[in-house]
Length: 625
Image (cartoon, rainbow, N blue to C red; front, side, top):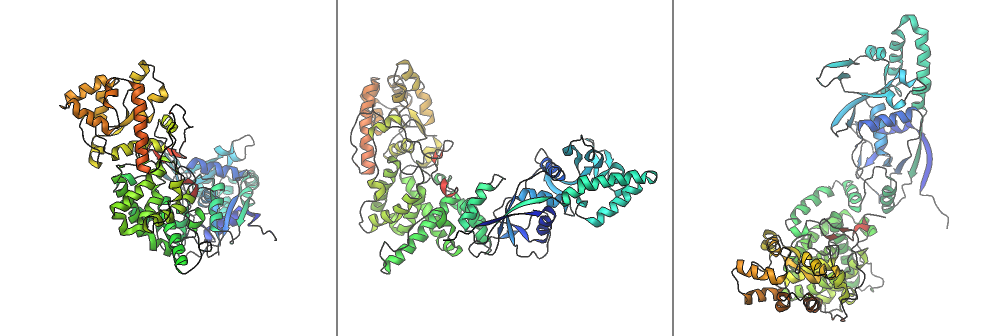
């Protein structure tokens, strides 16, 4: 098969490039970020061009591919009443081309920023004396003046006036906007030569040097151009942009779809903003991302396509697949999005309500943010059946298998694609147990390595204890959405670290989840660094409860009251370990092969864990090549 290049590499003059920008032949795709360069960077760029230094290649994408349609927008500073359809989009080089266009070819001052990031407007000049000094610094030869071309001191007093051609010539400040404007350039030259009638020959000689050393370098400047052919696939455009864009902006599939849908006059960003606001009424959904939402829509769209094929008699091997990977999302049409966006939104809301039944109320307590994707898709597909107690109990088994099997901390789009049809078939059509449940396995030794929120199972075990009725040591209240936030519940030590250190308890056992439980902030302050034998009587006295009631409360945390009261850490640890494993078995419906906790498995770190909000982010690979 003959290999066909996907791009051409050539050179073009800076003047031609900027004129194409001004004419709208070259424009920006909607996903490109705004012009952001500051004054110092603009001056440095102009100095480099004036010295014929390389400033890097510009990458363009040829338009005309119906499958890669983006809404165009003019480069900032370009003013056209009726912009044409662009021939090329800028993929890389926007900031440089915008800076050069505004400073060299525009009739308006450059909109830029100062060192304090304040918006300012500037005209750019070159100081002739410094530019012609062979020992001079070209960066210092480039200066910027305010729109009125008056320089003021800190008191607002004018200390430099360059508001007329005569004043510019007298100060030997040449506007860089002249380099491509021959007519105005000649007018300025004539004024410059006439400033000193007795030294015309000297001025003429100096002007010749200005032409050679300043103006012609701009006029002859060649820019390397890489032009991607219009046949380039949308996914490839996305990847190329991420790899070469020098602005540091990440182009994820949401941004690319935003630009695609904008070509059909649909503002995806605004639509998502409204849906996000609606979904984030539930605190537990506050970490949801726009790419999560697109993944759910992709799952629903491709699942519906597969079901339609199967219902028409197509064999499963020949039916279209279910997917939420990058390529599938990029194939999503505006019609697909509009057809399924409301259903996906409902799915996330149902997911939030489901998580509330599991006593998970905030992103910080959510074991995996990524598990929201299949959960929302499953609940959206179940529809009204998602309100049935039996269905929710069954779904809870799948959920906890994912948490304690630690299945959602990596590149897991393929698991999402299996979860949706398998869980739905399992619940609605008495299908076989989903693969994610069959592959879920929890080793008792893992308990010793669950020590921080970096682990989904660590957070999951605290959530499970709350779900199963854990009551606060002090208030005796079970945890619901109100008390969770009002009382500031968190995961705290049962035998405090201070006590464990004094009694030479192995730090791995001290900090293990086996020695931790969900407690309110006030209760934890009452515990301090004391042993249970000290703080339990204090709490019972202050809370006006008796020992029998305190024993009941401790048992809701699967804590043996007598072992805690006797400060027998080792016996307490072993007993609670066994009780915790029983809770996990009950939640997942899977038997755990017992082994000693002293033989820990290596700690499993959730991919892209966000420590600040406790969420494992395994969906990042749809945003990266």
